[in-house]
Length: 379
Ligand code: GLV
Image (cartoon, rainbow, N blue to C red; front, side):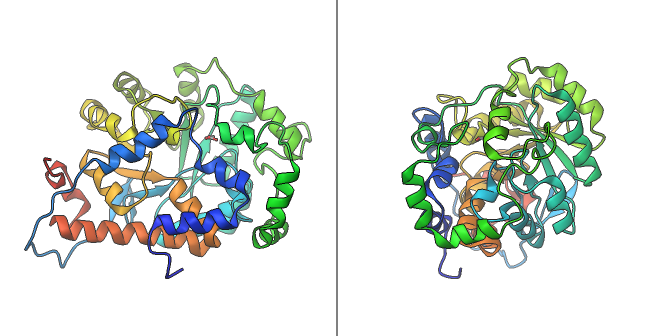
């Protein structure tokens, strides 16, 4: 892993090791991928202000996220099918996050279940919730997350319908999945991946299997999920979830100031400024463009987190400078997972942490609380 010196190295390694359908699933954005690309381009356009001859020998990347200490202002974002990037992927990623002292968020659409992960790690993790039509199942999921002592419930609010990702259709990542000859040939050329999956605890949606009328296999479960997207979802449902969940609630998928103001009224502890990694509304603004007005409107009333295009410590610094409390990152650690399992995720976190520390030194700041607009260059 030492020769992996940046997230792009991990991405290239993951591309070689993970079957194309799963690699592309993570990589893709919706439609023309304008928003996906804008997330990266707009972050890169935020230039950092080089400062010199400041004593930065005592600096720290330590941060507080939802009241809990973390070694840097970063959490691992929920990613569906994480356990298809590497066998037992969710457990490995959670362990790497906990060893690095940052939060991990498990997706509803994970392969390892809430209970699998809880049994395999020492500390609490966050759980991401999709509100499905079957409210009884949603209630049960919330109860399972509470029983597993999850430390926050992260509710995804931008997925009443699924954005179309062309590559998923072309690769047969459809519902039900279409296993084409091409997929079999691809999988046969990835023996290390196949062995890891063969040895893994599960190969289906762990949170669903056995809980939906006895359905277990990927085909029937993915068909069930496809019928469960709820277009009626509204703020009333958020209230209902807030009444069921006693712990900290995070609303993920807010891009608009008016929605951010409404989010504050729900009593949620945090919101995530997010366009779902460019996977939902194509043509929406980049997350980093949406961040400053939201921070200005609600930043003193709710913790504002950020995701969308974070691939480096410099990106974390940019988002913090523009008012985010912390970042979430999905693809960056998923590349690490595909490239090298737990060690790969640990490496992804370490790379971003080192980059953040060096960027702090070269912008002349010694603590996360000192990162503000003064580190942005006026160009
Ligand atoms: C689901 O959240 C996805 O982006 O595929």
